[in-house]
Image 1 (cartoon, rainbow, N blue to C red):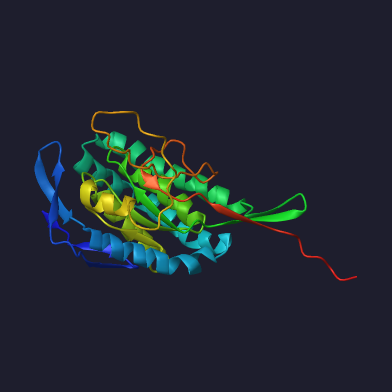
Image 2 (cartoon, one colour):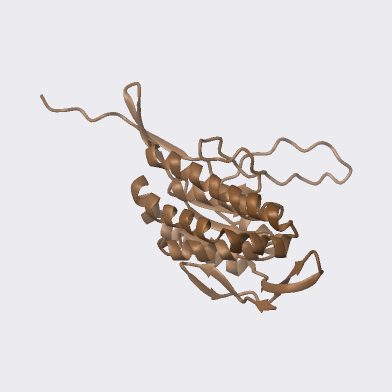
Length: 270
């Protein structure tokens, strides 16, 4: 059994601050095949700090500059499809044929679609007498489910990176191994340190710490219905309806809406 004790934070694998471990079980045999760190709020704090430190420089890059490491990441996904399929089968229990065609194949097609968009996406356009410039939202918190583990990661992380955002990912504790594989491919692709960060852990601890981290943008919730307990409803994460969002993804990540600044076009001296 492989025992992992590190998180991917700030462009490097570093020991988890949390000392606990989460066993990863093979559903077919119910045997533990690996263990990953049970990340804590302190691990999340370190990942968010790394993402924030990298956000300004990454957000200032051009689409063409971001396309270079993203293409390397896409190529890594293509080159490791067999390993991805075997990993998902081992930790999720999907038949290997389904893992090969869907669990490994679909994320690659999703990545291709976003890279195609990025290649000719216009971040600046003239609207009437103003110039509208779309800017990165900042740090994206991505919390992904277990059933299509790599697809959900790619569908959230790749468009966020393409838009110039940095990312902190907390994958489902049932399927963290393919997330670690993805982080390794990110590392090989040559992204600047802190642009992508991975924290494994349980939802009630690492997931809650990430979702409720200070600084995220939240949308107001409707008033809760009357109840005997009278407990307030937790606010829902703000989501973006932009071209970069994935309509097929469940609302499991908190991402501020993209910001746009309108500027008047420069006037020429006559």
